Length: 101
Image (cartoon, rainbow, N blue to C red; front, side):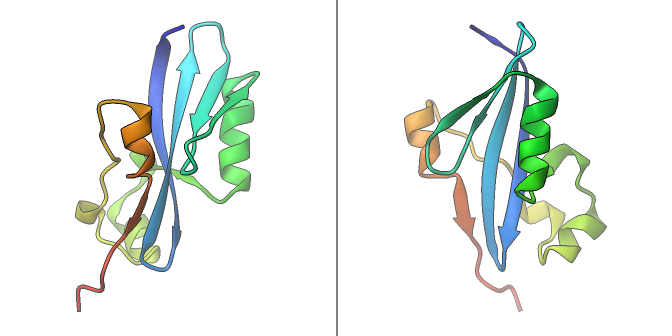
């Protein structure tokens, strides 16, 4: 099954960013790859988004400079992780930043 669309979501705790990847499937279902390396299935994209929002995640593509600053970051600091496969990606799903001051 291939992904129709992929989006990245993030939550923050201090200077730590926790990433989640939402994949929309052609069949109308969705899956979320979380920071523990789990792939969580959902019956719809809306239910996956609701679960992420309930867990206080925000969509990365909707983030602007003010949103990033409210979370204690510069927008330029934030970028979704990249890896050749999910096993390698798991290690990159939590990022801790040092203070820049």
